[in-house]
Image 1 (cartoon, rainbow, N blue to C red):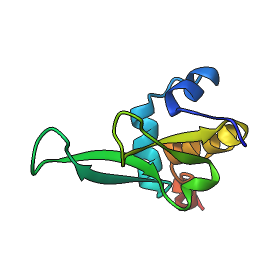
Image 2: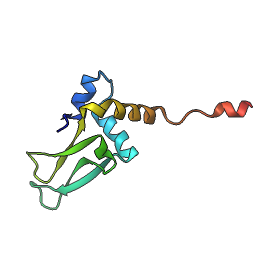
Image 3: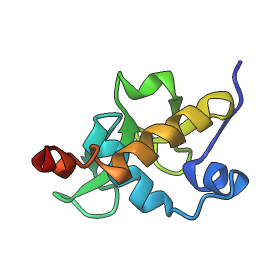
Image 4: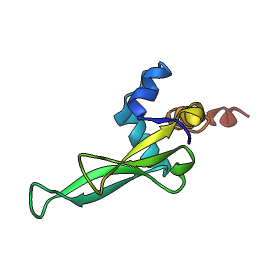
Length: 105
């Protein structure tokens, strides 16, 4: 079984100055992470939001059941492929190559 850990812990281990919140937003935009909802156990009629790895995202981790919230998962990422995932996040932050140089031709 592959070793997994939370986004927060892996970012710290890799000494990356990026918050887990921002990383998660990027992964949602990339389609690797999805936002889901479940009914609140405290407030009738209210929904709680949480994140889970999408089918595409499952190549980089797994959804671990949250023991304090049955029916809700928490994404955990594979330690051995986290560097590859970080590279994808970095590419997304930088955006597509700047093509303004084409105008000078």
